[in-house]
Amino acid sequence: MVNLLDFDRDALIAHCERLGEKPFRAVQLFRWIHQRGVCEFAQMTDLARSLRERLPQQARVAAPPVANEQASDDGTIKWLFDVGAGNAIESVFIPEADRGTLCVSSQAGCAVGCRFCATGHQGFARNLTTAEIVGQLWFAEHHLRARLGLGADEHGHRADGTRAVDNVVMMGMGEPLQNYAALVPALRVMLDDHGYGLSRRRVTVSTSGVVPMIDRLRVDCPVALAVSLHAADDALRDRLVPLNRKYPLAELLDACARYLEAAPRDFITFEYCMLDGVNDSPQQAQALVRLVRERVACKVNLIPFNPFVGSGLRRSPSERVAAFADVLRAAGIVTTVRRTRGDDIAAACGQLAGEVQDRTRVAQRRAHVTMPLLPARR
Ligand code: SF4
Image 1 (tube, rainbow, N blue to C red):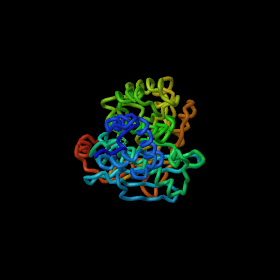
Image 2 (image 1 turned 60 degrees about the vertical axis):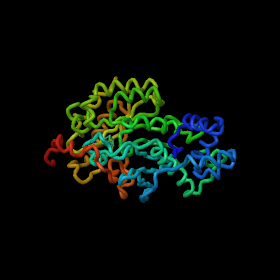
Image 3 (image 1 turned 90 degrees about the vertical axis):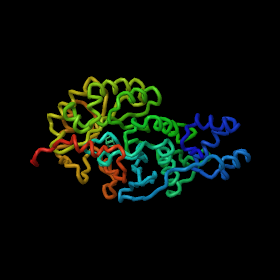
Image 4 (image 1 turned 180 degrees about the horizontal axis):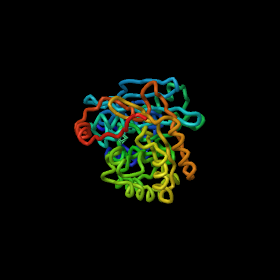
């Protein structure tokens, strides 16, 4: 039985054609699913009766089941989704004054194994399907609409034309560009005017630097791009982001520059997790300036590290973060310091600690290459 959340619009049209249905029927179906959040075919009243009766025998609309929900005092909501075989993934909704952001997972666990990341410490179980990626947005959007009492017009949008979720960041568990085949159809559903209708600027893929896939995304589905940088030299980045050994900084920055030719925004966002005594000195800020200046138009987002058991790392003191930001700003680089959200429910980035079975033994391999990063506490 197929899960219709696996299909972007073209794939749904092809599927309906195999059932002998015209493309406009597929568009109707697509809108019922994504704009109205309906999963019961019997409720899709403008579909031909014959199709309504046939669909339940061979198709379903199913997001992963919610295993747990936690709401933070600051309005952040974290959902734990059960993706089977003892694995769970997380999505986080972050309400702000002007928008609602959903942080979406792309894999159960992650094989990249960044030193400062709770997900990376758990190892890797498997790629999510398109249905499991889209299902996080499908559930969040329609659950929040119902919960907030938001009315919907005939297009499934709120009366004021906005949505509960109007910004998606692929920054949850996993490296999205290592699950490319499932990611791209999911992005297309998010962007589709008959789906969620999000602008390319409001959908961000965050990568640790899978260079060939950055080039493919530029061609296949250019959306906003965030790159996890975390160090300005290869020696340190090799240790913080092991993928750097395969795609070092020079190659990564060249790919970022190429990406800008097609990107919906005229800058790349560089994420930089501030680790006390590891990557947070003024000299390292200067090195970051030298690395990016005149090479890639960018913004830098400094992220307070969220400590977790076994990381062996500490959060940079706020005055050190401020000094680092000052160096970047003095060089003309737009720099933000991320406000931590949902701390009371462990929803902040790097704390997505669902249980993952490490089938590729990432954690074990990591243990062999782990080297001390921290100097003695100052
Ligand atoms: S930071 Fe991203 S790429 Fe690195 S281990 Fe965590 S989830 Fe994977």
